[in-house]
Image (cartoon, rainbow, N blue to C red; front, side, top):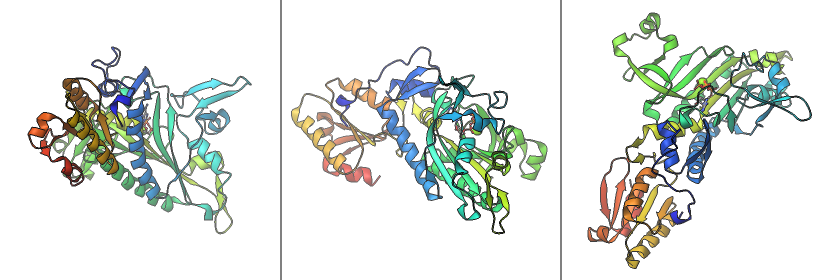
Length: 417
Ligand code: ATP
Ligand code: MG
């Protein structure tokens, strides 16, 4: 894409009321627009990042047998009343509204109930199980505080998956598979080394859950970790007995601030009993289905990555989710140089490399600042000065390493790492 055609502009200052680092950077670099506290629009660059995150998650969910669907955001009061979760004292994040024709509706904050209800039309025999479905969807939550930018939205993108299993064994096997798939997601997203799984008894309505916590200064949680022993504990289970069971001493654990990037829940058979989702087993007995629920905070991850991978100049995207791999920059009045940059732009595109070409008629300082702020993994400068030094200048955003490369060797240089 040519930057002259990108309608978004970078800016020096974020809105005065924006206090979170991730939103500040993402707004300044033109990835998002703030509608109001906790509500952000995704601009073209932001859409690309979110789509890249989704694609990684989608591949991993498909790989363990997930089928993608898309449930509605408007939800029926009746369905949630069945399980007592329509009650604002039970679920304190509901956005609700009223129909002109009469009756209340809710804006989806989660989908266990509607998905279980829907499944009653499709599951009747043990032969129909297991079933794994997932979606990417905007969730609505009336969060009391929304001061963490993309990390705590009142409207945000979540991947939620639901498993319907015949028995505890089948459920448990898939639950474990999901833990592995989540680790693969976080590794591919570039946060694998800093993401830990912790056990929790969950909210008032679940049997138990596991949280995926990523070390992040701006996070709202705290956990205790020991990297060597592969131990991570949250406050809830941090006590003398647990430490003894795990054979770890207090002084071997490091307290770190984290953000929850995923959460998986075991509902047992309770939800399906409440909602009357039963199947016939081999002997013809009606048995309740086992439900599991598995969330990943897609837009929260975008925020966490902007927080973690950034410096005083701007964002430093991991390669797998960067909107473009290369930010191609050229400056000066020399027409040959501009033509060379244009040729390189087409060559890179033809080689399947995502490239943003800064072809704007503005000064070099502003172009270089923008490239740093926007955070593509590689910046390639085509200029007279670079030509004198032996080609084009390739700077790796994450390390600042600079190399001068013959234009004919650029693609090989990038693809060979
Ligand atoms: P939290 O404890 O942070 O409020 P939660 O436990 O209520 O989150 P879940 O219902 O487990 O959230 O949702 C699944 C995932 O969705 C979370 O692990 C998190 O990554 C993400 N998520 C939850 N709430 C928000 C939000 N308000 N904004 C952005 N992402 C969120
Ligand atoms: Mg959670």
